[in-house]
Image (cartoon, rainbow, N blue to C red; front, side, top):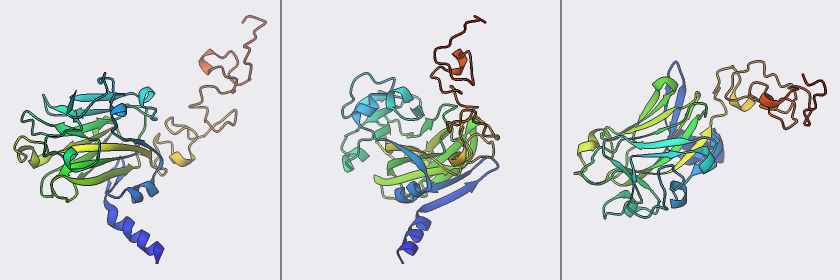
Length: 287
């Protein structure tokens, strides 16, 4: 009976499966179901210290801090496996940290959030996240606050490299200033995630409408990110195509992506014996 209940919960939380020639994407609104479908989950809560890691943020942000229209997070700063960029899409609109103006999502819930658009009649709360090329991502999640119930026109879309549309999800039903968990799992690398506020652009009277919080990044073990016919879970080079899975030094990292093929701690580009371990790089013949 318990197994049946879990299965039913997964069915109810699976909102949509969208298949194109490029990828199959599955949208969820339940974090437990999503976690069961992915691996290597990395969380990025919107704490002030995390937001300060953006290239554009110098000081620790406080409530109502105007962060500018774009935040660029490098993997070297965040400790994540990949960098990412968050952008407000209306010209002149800013991203605002922990907006507290009396009628914003941040006032209703205990989340650290980023509001889109915010003040000065920037009613278009559209935003997007982009993932740098070479940093394949196949699963992404976030918390959405303040969305309106359909038919509002709010739409969350997932794109692959080359701006190929994988699929779109109408924002789930919920009251104003509701909290929704939206996540996606893809069989191919995700390059861009886009939220379009739709008809709500002109419905909020110049006030706040949309806020977001707590990004999650993960991998779909059934994905084949490099298209070499090997699923990521079994591929010794997830992001480099190597159908033969050659691994000369048998260290579990394929030759196509191994930067030290003989494990002598000298990278291949500087190693005078690529496949024979020689950390001292001795070369008596000086050739």
